[in-house]
Length: 190
Image (cartoon, rainbow, N blue to C red; front, side):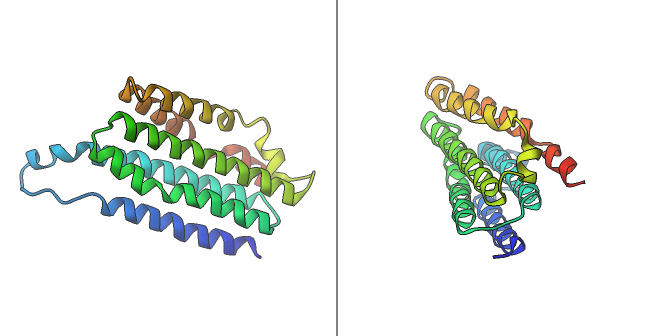
């Protein structure tokens, strides 16, 4: 299968995920600013998840640009990632509707962690498909952000039962860490 076809399919899934998330934003009843106030947790959870989906979309694109071959294992690894990302609308809605309560915050962190692990599996599968001289492997190097992110997610999951806001701060921290696209791959592609 061609790399572009996998990217096109994945792009469609990313677009659907964002669409479903935005549909969870309900129109307030009332014309004054006060009508918006009860919606702030839902909106903030949407913004955080939108940023995460954007990060995954951007880095997914870069990763496929640096890879050469698409194998059956790559297709399954990609679907594995898309599965976890497709849960973002559910956990985003649950988190926002319940004002960042402990269990929704923990489950949100679990989905973030599983998406990160699925992304890592996809990276390793793409590298294996390209062989020992993989451009993607050279571009990634030591990948300190990829190693640090799951640690922050695990910490967020653990503290969510005592300090929901601290868990969210850890999730926001990881998003800020990845907000700038992965320049290692851009440099390698030049």
